[in-house]
Structure formats: C-alpha cells, structure tokens
Image (cartoon, rainbow, N blue to C red; front, side, top):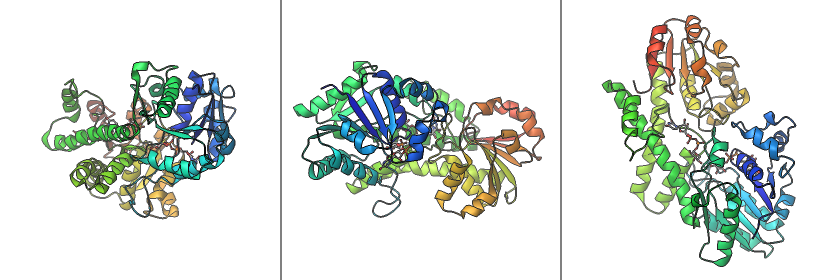
Length: 464
Ligand code: UDX
Ligand code: UDX
C-alpha cells in the first residue's frame, strides 16, 4: 500500500515540525496539518515564514520549501480526515487536572475527541497513527471507539512515538537514532499498515533504524525512554547538592562518570531542574499505571525522579533567598531565561516558573528577559499555577526585551535557561549597573566561575 495523503491533527510542537519534515522528504505525498486553533493555523500560513508559531532552528526553511507544494495547514479537520489514507494524532495530552488520576494520569479527552471525529467522517479504510505520548494500551481504546462508532470502515492503529527534543527538532527528525513503529504485526492487515509507515520514513531514514514492534512495546518504550533520560538528570542533580556540601565540582564528577562508555556523557548536566511537556508527564503516567496495576515499588521508584526534580527547583530558589540575607521582599531580581531549555519558545513545566513563584511568595520584584518567550506566555504560566491573582502577578513581574534593562539596579541575577547569548553578554557592564553586593545565581552552569569572581560577583552555581 502506498500512502498518498496524510492528515495530522494537531499543529503543535510535535505535529508541525514532524509533518514539515515528512512533506519535505516525500514530495509525492500530500500532507495536511489541521488544528482547531485558528490563530495557530493562521500563523503557520503566514506569508513570512519567520512568523510560524513554533520556534525551532531550521524549521522555517523546511516549511518554506514544502508549504503550498505538498504541505498544507488548515482548520478544516473533516475534509482533511476524509481525504487521508493515514491520520496522525498529535494533539496534546496534559496531566489531568480533575477527577480520578488528577495530577498524575494523562488527560485523554482530546485523543478521544479526535477518534470520534475520525469515526464520524471516514468513508474508507484508514491507518491511524498515535504520535502523542500516551499511556500504554491507549491504542486499544482508540480502536474500540473507531470500531464501535464508525461507519463500518476498517482501521489499523499504529503507535509511532516521537523522540524529537525541542530546540533540535528538525535535526532529530532528519537524523533520528531510531524510528519506532508499533502495530498489529501478527495480522496481514496490521503488517501492511506498519509497512506503509515504514515506507514513508524510508524516504530518508536508513532501514536499519526503522524498528517495528507490537503496539504495547512501542507505547511503553516512549515512556521508558523519557523516564530514563529524566532519571539521569535527577541523578546528577542529586549529586550536585552533595557536591555543594563537600567541595566536589559537579561538572568534574559528571565528566569523570560520563567518560565511562557504559554510562555515556549525555543528559548528565546538572541544572535547576528539568522541564518540558514530556518528562514529568510521562513519569507521572508511568507511576499512575504502575500503581493501578498494584506495582507500588515500581511506582515509588520512578516517582522519586520527580520528587528530586521538585526538590532541586525549590532548593535553588531557597538558596537565593538565604544568600540575599534571608529576605528578597521588595528586591529587584532579574531572571535570564524563561523557556524550559535553549532554542525553543516552549515554557511548559519550565523550572523558571517555579523559581519565580517561590520568589514572588517572598515578595520579590521580578524582571524577566527571554529572547523568544512572549510576555503574555509568562503571565499565563504564572496564572496557571493559581498562586496569586493576575493583577498581583502583573504588578510584581515585568518582562523586558533587553537583558541589560532586566539586570540594571537589580540585587541578583539568576540564569534559568542556557541560551547561548547569555554567554556573550557584557557581564562587566551588568555588574557595574547592579546594586552591591551583586549576586549571580547560575542555574545552568553556563558561566565560568573564575571570570565571574574576577568581575566581582558573589557567585553561586548549582553544584559548586
Ligand atoms: C505533544 C505531544 O503530542 C504530546 O503527546 C506530548 O507529550 C506533548 O507534546 P505538542 O505538539 O507539544 O504535543 O502540543 P501542542 O503544541 O499543545 O499542540 C497540540 C495541538 O493540538 C494544539 O495546537 C491544539 O490546538 C491541537 N488540538 C488539540 C486540536 O487540533 N484538536 C483537539 O481536539 C485538541
Ligand atoms: C524530551 C526527550 O528528550 C524527547 O526524546 C521526547 O520526545 C520529548 O521529551 P524535550 O523535553 O524537548 O525532549 O527536551 P530535552 O532535551 O529532553 O530536555 C528536557 C529537560 O531536561 C530540559 O529542561 C533540559 O534543560 C533538562 N536537561 C537535559 C538537564 O537539566 N540536563 C541535561 O543534561 C539534559
């Protein structure tokens, strides 16, 4: 079976870049990305490709090449579903904020809505691909809805988890370590569907990196990969606290440990805590599933990764307050960076949100500078926590678009995202314009300790 028309529901951080790359690499396949959010679709269609709604290095060039040729963005979900042979579901699956599993389980309401819409519209057989990260066995639920509410057409459900990391999404898509495709490989129809998706990726990914498994293995592998990666960050962060108490330097420890080829050097950078839409959500999911199956030890084991991460964020903020003579009330504090990592404008679960909230509870006055995050997003993130009113947040937090303006007359600066441009700042000037003693809290270990001390900062970096 050859795929001619692909539809992707959800034009977000995952659906947008993934479909742009598929369209670029497969010029004979028509790819339509649909979303219920009109603003977002409008932005994807903006004449100036620099205005697309997601910032990812290299993405606008890919969109520019394919858009209008075989890549389309639309709000007409029904007609895109109708035309497609293959439908990707890339809608968001946030942690539930209500009911059973609140704060832990993934909210699958958008997935279910998509399934019902597909079932209502489809008039011929479809392959439905889960791209969103989902709890194990979601495919079963999807199939159930499709088979029981549909028009009697046949569906094959595939799981094709995304492993792209934000900030390097285009490169991760172009050169993936592996692409995982889970399907009903024991039946001829299932195998045919898996092969159809393999053929799409084989346009640019070497065959030996295309891994096919059963659906459940694929779904669980995604959660496992993210849990392992997050665990490494929590492990090194746990060591960072020990380093601070003992005079060891966490960078040196990380390097020494990472050179052991059995361990490897990646994901061993200590930080103010991991963020992003996936790590916490996926681990909470794993914990929830384990608990539901009565596997309490397994659940507790993985939950500790989250508890350590929460501890690290709190510890960083508490350390700021303690260092600033136990009070930040009325003090101006500059936060450099709000995104959860560099090279993205995504702020979901960013450590900066929690550090800011902690400092605001201590009545600090906060000024934020981030090269890519818009002020409205910052207020929305704080609002989402619900700690104080919108009005209070707006009166205590200001957002500026110049790092020197953010730091001028401040008591302290905290680096919360590792944006490259922060390394290039004129730290001498920043120091001169700050109130003395001037404190620099480096939550990303971005700056070199010696130079900062030469300038005169009271310097604190995680892990030394
Ligand atoms: C992804 C993944 O798909 C999710 O599993 C992962 O764990 C988090 O990241 P992402 O692309 O980052 O989602 O989410 P987001 O940027 O919020 O995009 C989802 C899009 O789906 C939004 O634009 C939203 O408007 C759209 N959507 C949501 C629909 O079109 N229909 C719906 O019913 C729900
Ligand atoms: C992650 C997975 O890497 C990706 O495969 C999956 O598909 C989605 O989730 P993402 O959340 O976009 O990707 O970014 P990632 O690079 O994994 O970083 C997550 C968080 O961990 C960031 O806040 C980052 O700053 C932090 N981190 C990462 C560290 O603190 N130290 C490290 O050594 C690495």
